[in-house]
Every structure is written in C-alpha cells, then in structure tokens.
Length: 201
Image 1 (cartoon, helix red, strand yellow):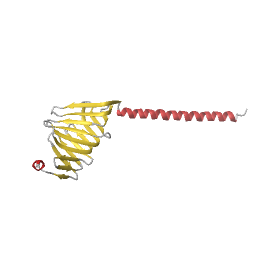
Image 2: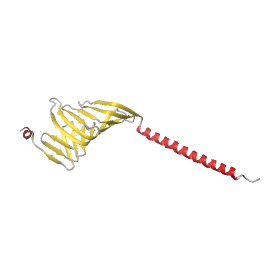
Image 3: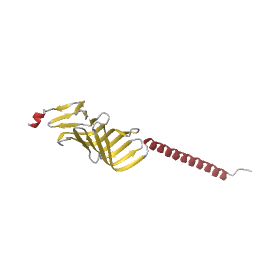
Image 4: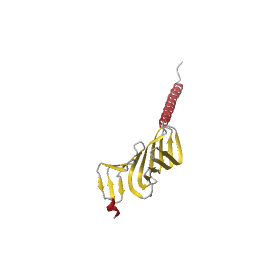
C-alpha cells in the first residue's frame, strides 16, 4: 500500500511549524529571563518625587541634596533630576545648583547607609557664603562636580572657573578642600590673583 504524498507533506509542514514555534518560544523566554537578570543586577527600583536627603557628620560638616524626581535602587545608587546640593561646614555654606537639564548620581555605602560620593552634571553653579555674615566669598561654575564625603573635597571638571573677589582661577580640574578652605588647580592652570587689599580698593 503506497504512502499518500499529501499526508506526508502535511505531516512535514506540521513538524517544521512546531520546531519554529518552539524555537521562538525559547528565544523570547530566555531573552526575558536575561533582561530580568540585568534589572536584578541594578537592584529593585523605586521612583520618588520631591526627593530630599540629609547627612550629618561629627566634624560639623553636613549636607542636604534635593531633586525634582529620583530613581532609588536597592543596591545603594540614586539618580536625581534637577539636583540642588547644600553643604555646611564650620565656616561656610556652599550652594550648588543646576538648570532643568541637570542630573545627579548618589553613591551610597550599602552596609553603612552613608553617602560616599555625589556627582552632579549640567550647568553647575556654586556659591560660597560665610556662615556668619552670609556674604558671598567665592563663586564657581563647571559642567561636572563631584563631592567626596570621606575626603571632604569638591572636584570641579568640565571647564571649571572659580572667582574670588577680582581673582579668577581656571584649570582642567579644580579641587576645593572643605576642611582647609584651600583651592588646588591641576592641568593648564590660568590664574589671575589679586590681594584682598587690592580687591577692597
């Protein structure tokens, strides 16, 4: 009894269709699993509006960082839109702001629940004020600013400029040591320095 070519064709077509279906199912299943794995590496995500975080230290240094919105990861990282950072030391208050395009990244030591660094990018503006008189003592601008809480230092990058009275300071990177009120300039230094007496005249 001969085989029916029509039935054989239908059987082969069905097997091919089944193989294609299984292959597609496996592809999308494992792709979905892979994407979930990537998300889990970042940690669980929590979205917050009107974000605010404060931290105090024993050396009388404290800071407050705020943002319009924030994405907080369980691994300790936080991304902020339109960040504003306020730093207070024993002698001065430092206000750091950006425009609407500004972004911020907070890196936290998970086991200590303590901020390690804050990175702010955009049109960054810095205003330094005497904590007693509230007089502006210095101003700065850059496109990237990093605050290292352990080292108590502000690192300005991206065409940084600092103005103190009539004195102007420019370089590739400008460090400001909060504990000593000292500026450090590195790379292509361009400074115009006037004494305080000349500034007041």
